[in-house]
Length: 151
Image (cartoon, rainbow, N blue to C red; front, top):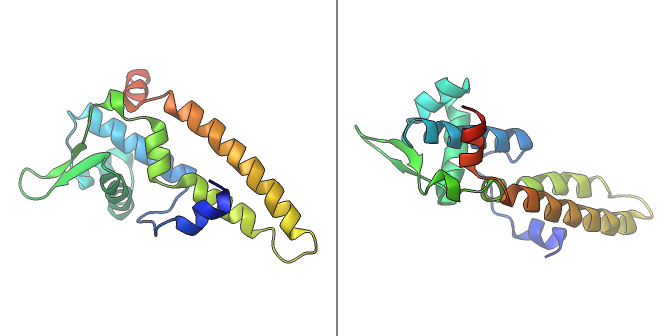
């Protein structure tokens, strides 16, 4: 799928799509795994030194993508929906649409001059290659790998 087609299909995001958000999402998943897979958003915000609203937006996106589940009430909180060994970093990256956001901004900067279309096409090819390579690396790593290395 071309970068432009992917950009046209993207849904509105519940949280900002950046590498920082990706990092925070991975850290939240690691924290959930370290805390027996269950934690409130307030506890996660405190643990990661974040504002509650930011972590809730990230958690909402992860829940929408079926990486975590949330429960309300007295026994409420967030927990991993599957084993940490089965959650790849590629799934998190894709759920947050990090590449779409970054490529959109790069492609947006190519407008308004006489060779913009040619530059845009070249950038699209480069961005597709970057995406393929990035996902290849991220598919080989899981949340469990990060937990193991951060003990």
